Length: 272
Image (tube, rainbow, N blue to C red):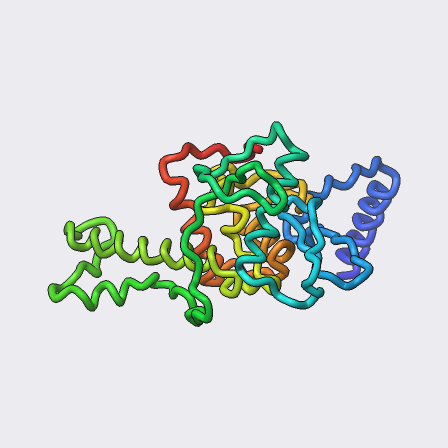
């Protein structure tokens, strides 16, 4: 035993000496922490306490006179503010690769004789309409579809023994999931916003969201982002809400809706 201990001590010493005298390799470079806290859009502080709303570019903002910080805009006010912010952004970025929805004529702005253009809007929730609690479930409403069908449905092997009726059920479940994402995307209350801004006000019908280009580096966030990261950026900044968890039914439904609007577009991750 003493011999073994002595031998071990010698080996330990020799190894230690080698480590101490040999060249020390540099530590491997650390990868960027993808889960680290992202940057915030620092908004200017108005002197009279009015509400300031920021655009999702992380730079453009405007003060809303007559509405104090902490108050929420009406949908009409929020739409007007969003439109003004977008016009300002487009003015500053005339060569931007913006992908708008088809435009339609609108009445001239106050004090102007030039007709404005407006993105076509999906009908918003009616005044006083409550937001359905809970959102979608992991089954995406499939159970509700099943209740409408009297005959048994396939519930066995995933890749076989299913019929056209089964595929119709799955398609209906998927469409219901997308419809839920449409609802949340157009409802400032549903996304948890506090100033009345909803996603569709800057991205009508999910325009210019380009889900096929993610993952990609987002300057606003200061890191490589997934689509859900950019959704949360918009919820936290323009909408002034709290970020949604990855598994939140609202986040999953909005992702489904946005991807559905780009059906058939070629994947091109990393594209700006």
